[in-house]
Amino acid sequence: MRSLFALTLVTALAATLFGCSTAPDPAGPATAAAEPRPSLTPIPADQYHPTLDAARRALLDLGYTLDRDDHRFGVLTTKPRASATLAEVWRPDNRTADLATESTLVDLRRTVRITLTPLTRSNPLTPFALGVEVLIARRQAPLRYLNGSARSVFASLNALPEEWEARGIEPEYWQPVKRDPALEAHLTQRILDRLSSAAPQKPTD
Image (cartoon, helix red, strand yellow):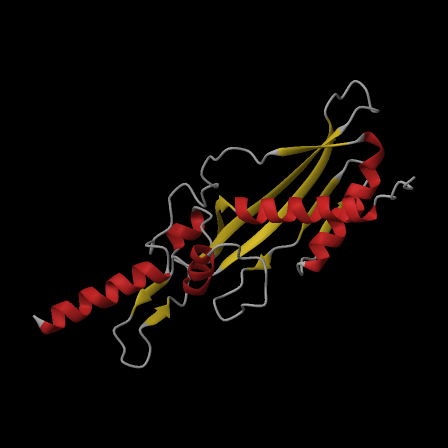
């Protein structure tokens, strides 16, 4: 009974650490669950370039590296950035305790996409809409298994099974799992704060 209990405990631990998935989905990595789209913030027409500049600085302040910086089409994207653990309290990307805990147990990373699009495409002088989207992906390792060794509980198969290889299944991959609305709101506010502080002050009478 004691050995059975120990095996059950180790199996539960493995499920927790690896997202309760030891085998890949036959359809491959799933897309993030359907969620409401990020809210859009109206931006005055004359604030197009200042807004993108403020967005770029806000991303760099949080430690992100730009992957696409397209002022013409109003798009900024970042390279994936590993999520902070509970021990990295100085990093501001985890805006909730739940995400900080989850990032400690499993490998998570974020990518950010910021867009600035006309509210009325037929008139380029109309105000713009600022959109901030943060996508969280989790690393999946379907080849990990319990090897029963006292030295190492987890191990990896040395070779990808031929059946999986024929189906295009990778030994490891990043699976989009959800958005991060808390960081989206935080980034949006940082951008707006930068715009406000950079705006010229009107002279007082």
